[in-house]
Length: 332
Ligand SMILES: Cc1ncc(COP(=O)(O)O)c(C=O)c1O
Figure (cartoon, rainbow, N blue to C red):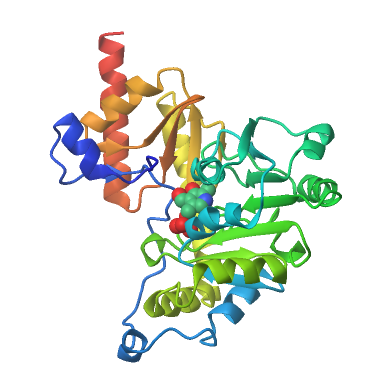
């Protein structure tokens, strides 16, 4: 099992710090997520039904022809490698490690790529791109991705695009281009909607691939209450608009605050910011000892910051960064 952000209790135990009152900025989950209202008792009592409105709501939100709900996009990441036999899989790296892990586990030869050329595409069965990328926030234009897909399709290859962080600004999203063979897009309601615990994600693609994945996942793979919550969140247009504005404003505020302490943001999404930094380990440890958890990466070296949720969290972040920078100024 791979390591992920959000493990406050584990880090607290390892560093011997009180696990209470941590500020957890180690994930890219919206801290101001969609507020879940009371769920009707019938939703708990009955078996989930495919015709409950979730698929229609998601198709409208993503603007696509076909999709398949799953218990988180993670469930799809783990299933896709079972649908193909052999070949080389290219993964744009560094990125969310579960992709490489899932393909390797099914016996595929995985090549981590910093860039993609046409000759590389001709040698790959599958190319996986996380767009925008987690953790580097790199965004590949839609036109480039479509040209890669056509090149891969010429030999029945797949382009898999994980758009888990695309909701806040979907300008380069491929959801509207899906439906034909070889282009597969993954979406999640865990990030922008802040509903990671509900475990709902979607696969968008051709009917043949969706049917094959549906077979693997089996009946009732998404729980009824999770389907109900996802449907309501996906249809709440007013919330989508307000949240996009709030996130954009808060992202700008975070970039500025980090910059004031010498942490220069190289790239960002609405939900997290990437700070390449040679002293990432040192920063991470000093922050963790003050009860502030961010995500640290060693290859390449850097820190990923999620957004604080309320004024007390902004204040806490600012206080911790100020105490670290003034300590370093005293003892360089
Ligand atoms: C890029 C990316 N894709 C997919 C996932 C899985 O998300 P979920 O299974 O909650 O939809 C994550 C989780 O962190 C992620 O960062």
